[in-house]
Picture 1 (cartoon, rainbow, N blue to C red):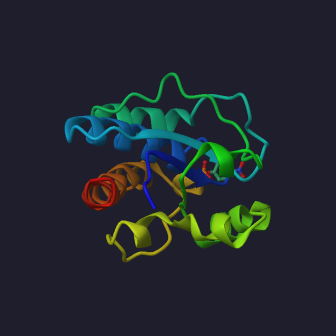
Picture 2 (picture 1 turned 60 degrees about the vertical axis):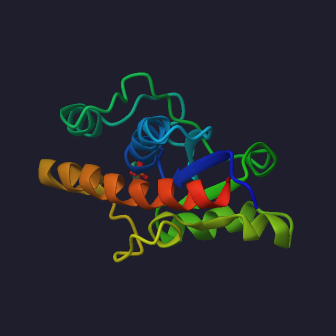
Length: 158
Ligand code: 4NP
């Protein structure tokens, strides 16, 4: 499998997956890899909204711009539009796989931190219910996961 289009999937698409998308976009460009990234949520409650202001602030402090993000819900077409669909936690992975129509599509889904080899934890903790420290920790975890992602994509796409 070659993965030139990667989709990050969380629940609301206002915290974890927009963060992973922004960090990945920057680190993939830094590494000179030609990979397109995007994100969405299994749920549609926040569709059309920007990222959570706490997430935007924590990401900005680390040099990542989430100001232009607009949330959207996962759709069936995402399996055609993306090569690799990475869920932030196991609930998101379940939601993602429920929408997959074929075994080949299921094969292109995985847990973000597991696929990147940067687990534990397998699940990317949702900072939404927590305090500012949780958002800062999420940025650090996203950076670690994305470092693993860049290395794996470098080998996969060579
Ligand atoms: P995310 O966080 O999945 O990382 O974007 C959440 C945002 C909103 C909700 C849940 C998780 N919510 O229930 O509205």
